[in-house]
Length: 123
Image 1 (tube, one colour):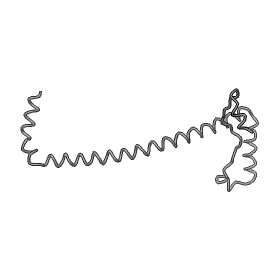
Image 2 (image 1 turned 90 degrees about the horizontal axis):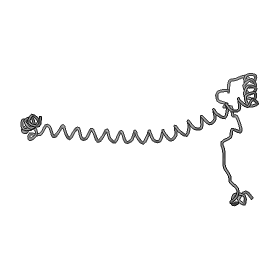
Image 3 (image 1 turned 90 degrees about the vertical axis):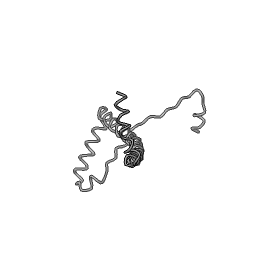
Image 4 (image 1 turned 135 degrees about the vertical axis):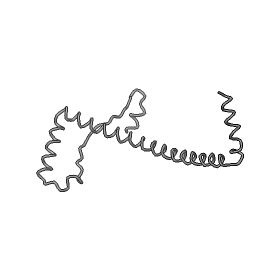
């Protein structure tokens, strides 16, 4: 039935994020007495009954959603960048080793005075 409505060209549809429930995690409250749990539920019921309180709850939920999606995307980016950084560090290490080996060769040591003279002439 709903597909018929979606197929209508003169109708537009959209979605929105709405907070429809408040869930209390049991792990943190496992050792709480029933009176403390009831007081917490009563406090949250008062928040939900107040329009400003409901808005605060929605803002907390949306903030949590945006932080979690942001950290998930950033986390992927960071791990990819770390892998690139490790690869570049290995490449730099190999190049430094090649330069060190090159500087220890007989020809490099023999041509040192010529390179020094060339630098002096370039000034």
